[in-house]
Amino acid sequence: MLVAGPAAATPDPGDAAPAQEAVSSQEAAEARAAIQSGEIPGVDEIVHSSNIEHLANVPKDALKSLNSDLAFQGKYAFAGNYDGFRIYDISDPKAPKTVAQVLCPGSQNDISVSGNLVFLSTDSSRSDNSCASTTQPASVKESWEGMKIFDISDITNPKYVAAVETNCGSHTHTIVPKGKNVYIYVSSYSPNAAFPDCQPPHDGISVIKVPRKAPEQAAVVNFPVLFPGEGPDGGGNPGAPTNPGVSKTTGCHDITVLPSQDLAAGACMGDGILFDIKDPEHPRVLDQVEDNVNFAFWHSATFNQKANKVVFTDELGGGGAATCNAAVGPNRGADGIYDIVGKGDQRKLVFRSYFKIPRHQADTENCVAHNGSLIPVKGKDLMVQAWYQGGVSVWDFTDSSAPKEIAYFERGPLSATTMATGGSWSAYYYNGYIYSNDIAKGFDVLKLSDRRTDPAKRIRMDELNVQSQPDYFDDF
Image 1 (tube, rainbow, N blue to C red):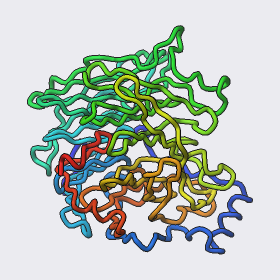
Image 2: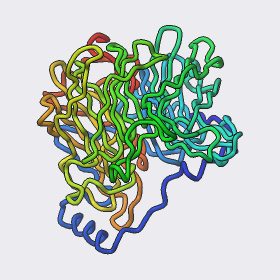
Image 3: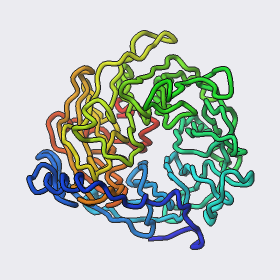
Image 4: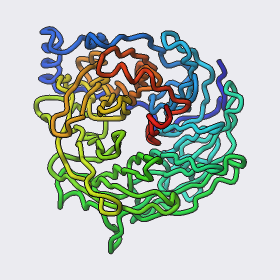
């Protein structure tokens, strides 16, 4: 194991785990009663459906902050953490081994890998672009946020080779490999007139071009405006008070591309969009939808294999609230399933139904729809998905109007008396296994054994960045 990066690196306070918050005495009593009755698992107790086996857990080590997203290449898993990233050898899924840990603080450290390059998002204002940076207000012009690029030619010793500053930082990013280049779509939001490098309106995405053989030449090549509009606030969903409880659109949270179809789906705060990426430097919006009844914050997107459906997630409460309970109900903090109808530039998104895990969680558990991936089975639309402390859910949306859960894995609450942030940030299917990055508990490996999903075990990938969806069956 190698811990890389200067030891002087200092995490931004905004990047650290939120402090535990006391819930009301009534909520705490209800949580304890639910545990005692068996309605929910006990604190840290692991429960799962009979078709899932928990193979391994690797606790956090040198990187103490929140675990975030995952990417895969060959026998390696790349795990983001607000303090940097960690590389695992998963050639034996029952016993993952740490290959390297890189200390490089900056939320969220959203991560992707392509060839010899690793890409890392920084969405917190830092003193400079180094891995030894310290926190510095975004109101200071010299502060830095954006993309970092590492060379992993030596997997045990990643080298930091380039940085690109982007407006409003990089909350998440999505790579679009194109031959000798890798394009990066950078999602960021929440501009402020007091921030020199994050001015309103901010109704687009930064597009970075990275030459594979010269990543130090990476640069922003365009900032396409996806929500054109008049006035200082631009276009997109106006949010409250026009639409109470809905986020105003001031950028995108996450984008998923389907390169084989030249398509992308954007989850953009108050809007969901479908766009054409045939020219990756100049994406074109095909359709834009809103849900001002049940969606508070459009968070992420997943295409099905046939590219005739998109699953959007609603991150009600921002990932820090208890929304998997009877009070919130089944249609909020959930997935929204949309069919893609029509052809070419006339394609439209048409809503079909919502999906939410059917197990209520305690009021001390942050729980809401989060990151997931397809499970590649021909003729079926199957997905594994993280729900923070709601755990990992496997579900079937082959019938867009009647989705159903077919497997699950979860831990009981981190606490029965306080709201403590934890649970699965990302749960992805890769080469026969489910890998989950738990914010608090570390890296989990799950084995799914079910006749409905077993055919996926024959699909082998050389690389997987879930937000850059492969055509699984052409690759096979």
